[in-house]
Length: 153
Image 1 (cartoon, one colour):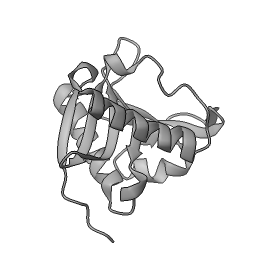
Image 2 (spheres, rainbow, N blue to C red):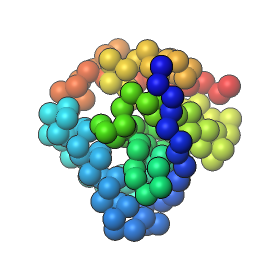
Image 3 (cartoon, rainbow, N blue to C red):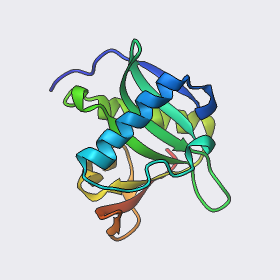
Image 4 (cartoon, helix red, strand yellow):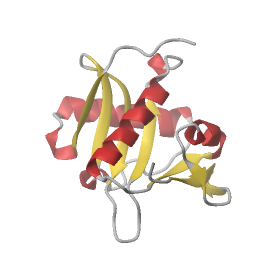
């Protein structure tokens, strides 16, 4: 197994990003979710201003990112838009990103179950972090997904 690159963790609200930082994060998400996965969908969905954004960085280079939703009366805290730079895959950054995202959710929202919508082929990956499927498989933007929860631990 290849070791994780050294990285720093940055967590902030959308308004705290410089234009270049925001551009890099949104470009990575479009490159991964829209271009690489050949899935035309509204990546800029209007939800980013309400979320925390977690980034793994090597200096100023963006390695990976995730979007963290706060809980609402109808939903648990949620992790979404989990993406690793194509240039840095195979370096265990996905695992590092999920560990950091879970830790941030637990810090911000202690004693809360965490949820996510997983692409079905990644179900085992998310299960390794304690997430359990809670739905049947469904199509979201043409890609099979399953809803998963991570109980309070």
